[in-house]
Image (cartoon, rainbow, N blue to C red):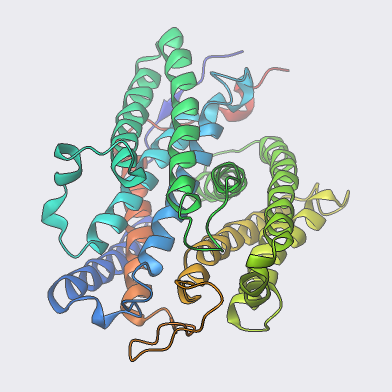
Length: 396
């Protein structure tokens, strides 16, 4: 295999500058939304006492999943022996780190007290998943950047060792994120031992889909040649990941529906015809699994890069819907404090809470994502991340 040559992009075209400008404006809008939430309180959002975790938390766990999936793609060459994917390893590792930075920004800025960021590190509680995940996330970012540094230095043995550690840590981090929700025993729509592995499955599908899109447009806009066979191969991996995601969705919901105590909660989520049922079936199941799988498994559309990109876009959107379904419906459903009894109060105990994403939250989420890709676009200009000779570097 010919040695891969990496270089920075010129980044002086009008299109590139326009992209930076658009991402910068959206980022500023997100920071304005965060400042508004900080100064005026969470009353400006759609969140309430009944629904304290809103769209910012959805964005946070969504970005964590994208990060974990991207890091696995980065390690395909160093850990899994897929040398043809080495040309993408730097980009994927950087994007994994930036996505987790964005996720942590979403969490910290949603606290309402971001100045207390160091408190979890000085008040360690091994029985708290929040406390444990603070350590896991911090170590994850360090591993990503050290892994990327080893790639720049071309220290192959170190890259392989760090790649293995990175994959292990990515699985650990996303298992911990799933456990934050799965260990909540009081919420019927959350409590599940399957949430940690299902989080990992969705991370692999969404991370792979995102990398397909990012790689295609990064090379296209940079004017560099990209071997489309590599993206088609990623498309085949994506198809396999979708099967795993579908399995976990099926098993988790069938298992939960089996218990009489969960009948009402499952009926509310799956069969009530409300907006959550619509998001579950159309967004999570349809866009996140069924529609892209049909595209990828078909021998005509599955071999077309255009259709693979459409399938990837559906997966990226569908997994966002999946994260929304995990976070929100479980909160709007009332907690059964006294089983078999109806609870009514002035605080709407015992009734289904109302929640809708506010404009401030939407701007916050869009701003965080835009800031991540603003940093990514700038990194392409200042660091040697993109290969020059993709086609020549593949083994014949």
